[in-house]
Length: 289
Length: 220
Ligand SMILES: Nc1ncnc2c1ncn2[C@@H]1O[C@H](COP(=O)(O)OP(=O)(O)OP(=O)(O)O)[C@@H](O)[C@H]1O
Ligand SMILES: [Mg+2]
Image (cartoon, rainbow over all chains, first blue to last red; front, side, top):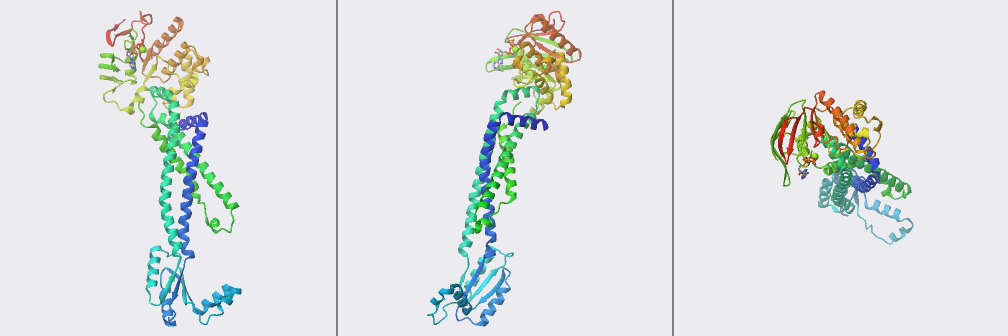
């Protein structure tokens, strides 16, 4: 084991240009791999954070009585997925509208009658959030007699949802693709190094070397190249992320919410190691004595 | 120790050895002789398993070619020191490392390696060349490095394929003396050569090959 490492390190240094090239290629591949993981992670987080900002507005029919409203509010308050229900009367709604229009409030002056609907503002319970359940709940609301219409961020909701689902497929494909690429680079590097030392290896075999003794240095080398590429990729990922975060406008909420999970920084070199190992094993194939 | 039973070896369409049978006991010193192309090297290659017999069975130190598992081959080879006809030295490693590798393969510690390599170098009279690369050595010196590597692992069998082929008479005599010493310690030796001078008057057993057949097998 120690001997393998020593031989491998010597060879890494001796063929440093070939190895550097491989490490850079692997680093590039694993960098993209990391970016994919990063995007996947953040998109996943985004879908999970949807309910935080998720408010359902239920517009009630104009003829709805106070009693009916009270009954609805009471029953809604008991729902598991709801954290808060707020009733906004027609009048309140108009006041709010006037407030928000401020100086331009004169546009409302010509109105004889309040054109707005009374409504309920429902905040969802973040902990109990479940997409399916929420969708069913909205359907149920729409079916109620006193409900005029239900407005909720359905567009954003379903967009993010389908974006995430589609991206997951793309991400998986990319990860597999780049894994294969990294394995291939390690494979060809080890293969080249192996062929360069073919005569030496033949002699080792005749002297009684085991397969392990012969393979050891190469596997060590391939694995090491993989880790090195991974570390480089992780470093690049971190640096670029930090720089973008530093330069980026903090007013852009997207920039603020993005996060580089330290686990990704670990996954990338570990993947490099595993892929390098696999590549070396394939490259060495079945040795014959 | 070594038993050949009806062994035939065919390369492509050349029959290098034809239905060969013989036995060598532990501690014997046997010369294998015959003209060029007779099959001497092939016979040795079959023993250290660089080649497989096409027919017949070879058994060495309790291992038999018909039942031998692939993964046992390295361990069997460690019992066999070989002085290759074409040396097979590592060109990018110095003399010391060329000899040490035989022990590194066996997992011997570096400290013991240093002792044993120096001892082997002393035996072949090459201590002053420990740091040289093979390319900086004469043919005779390279041959002696090969001998040192073959014996450093203290094998039970030593196979030597023309180990004096590149040496002058004095050096050759020196090597022959080393081989006798090694044999005196109990190592079985098979010595392939076409040079009759090396075995005449030794009283050793001689196996003479011609075109893949044993034409003589008796004491000199
Ligand atoms: N790898 C090979 N492929 C094909 N033919 C071979 C091979 N090795 C040896 N031969 C043939 O087998 C025959 C015996 O060869 P071998 O090397 O055993 O002879 P040798 O007695 O050692 O000769 P020399 O004294 O010249 O070393 C020769 O005819 C040779 O051409
Ligand atoms: Mg020969």
